[in-house]
Length: 310
Image (cartoon, rainbow, N blue to C red; front, side, top):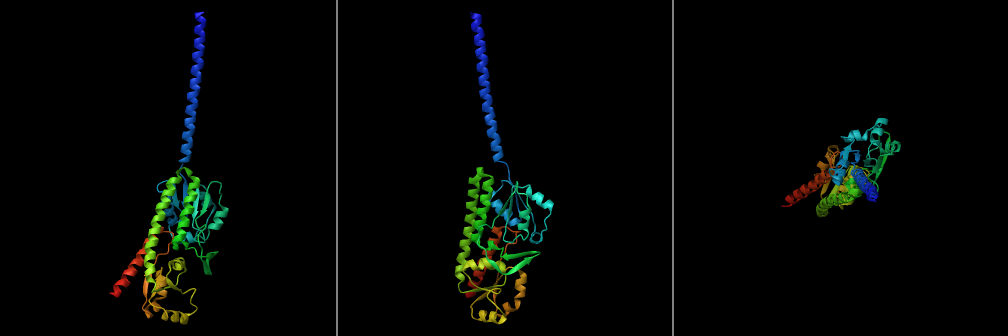
């Protein structure tokens, strides 16, 4: 009898031990699955931008997360790029392709059409921004550009661009959404601070008229509240220009390029105009640097006219 009881006890112990082992094994497998899921969630994204400006903008949102690179080191290469199958294949290996749109990269529409999008998502950051059309179409190589691509000269458009970039990254990495939202808010605050400072100065310049000759400045001048004369749009000939200048007080020549300054040298001297230089982004500097440069230009200009009054 004792022998029979001993046998039953041994069988019971073996069965119980086996069940406990399976339970522990199931727990370990579940834990491994969770760990694998966490690892997948934390996988770094490969993000490529067309230029440095967008590279820096993406960095503002993600900081040190993910692998970020840019395609072009200078504006000339970006404008004149001729893509190949190799370039299409290289970009297709990434997770996100982020580009400016609105003709800033004249070749991008054809490129995206031919791109294998099974892995990479093309992100046009201009989606939702307010666009100004060119008065005259511009042709870059074989591409006709009808809309002015320098929409970031309007700081309100930059808010939209930041939102588009943030959303595209959150779609691919929802786990870290809170981090991206925090970085987005901090970047917006910086831009809003710059805008308030700039508006404070431009509001004080209501007694001045700003003469421009470059389309790239239109987004700024049309949203700045400044009195402006656009030589490309508002003036039909030299006599009309002379008439407009004579009827305006305190004319200032607002320019970006040294060539624009040189081309208008005679009329600047004739009417003893003050000049004010602005930076139009070329894809190589960060947006923050561009805004700071323009803010400092207006600060220095305002300080100089205040000194002249003393």
